Image (cartoon, rainbow, N blue to C red; front, side):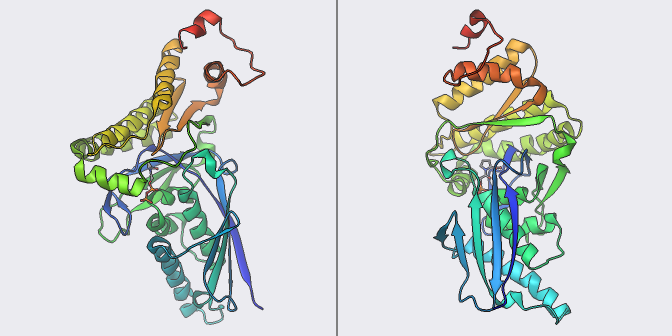
Length: 346
Ligand code: 2P0
């Protein structure tokens, strides 16, 4: 029995400039460009193995050991695109095995609990596309492959890279210029760190796809965001990353999270992703920055209540003094602050 396989990983990515809104639902073409920061390939990632054989009867997928359907239109688009690229190689070189005609078995595993409330579809689609591309020995670059991942899930295109990534929205109707590009590798700004505060592990209220459709259709604020706010912010954030300017990066990140959640609230009926704990975390971050008279931390929230905090390694003690104080059940922490100093944040 001939059997071939390839394995790869893809990281979870967190947007610091949010994708929210589609101009084409089938191709997942966005209404604005976005930026993500992915700090670790090891902590939060999907590991996927793609296997093919002329003896397989059908395409099959296992997610964390459980069989799942591959039937969704989005997944089918991705598989069709990859098989087409493989077919082109086989037509050029008749000595290649005809993988494009064989069925695939895909096994995918996340190294973080689903209950952590983190979106896994981005890493999942990115790992699926990367693993099959590796199996098929496709010559396409990560940016080219990101266009296929985008059809699976918009934000997945950014998980083709680690580090600092831009998803350029593009202008063309066929989506051929809507792709992810690297702004900087992980090593470009290694002092940057992230902490995830799991506020709730519940499934989110409104799924992203339908949430963004509602916002595009009903929010007036959304038009202001995509036309006048994000294009400028995209350039400013890229510059702040390239110049390793944390105060500017942090301010833009926090403002963009707030702007995205404001358009959710401005949708009709409104969409609420933040809860009271999320709002307390927002207030705490501003209080910390004010306390030190320095930008120590930035927060960002996706389509759910969990916070991702960005900070520089050298500020870790400053930030965690407050976090441990707030979440007092963490033992072994010697606070550097007096009770009086900390009591104002209770
Ligand atoms: C982002 N989110 O930029 C934004 C911020 C959520 C809030 O991308 O319909 O799962 O598959 O393209 O990518 C979530 O949306 O939506 C998302 P689809 P996706 O990360």
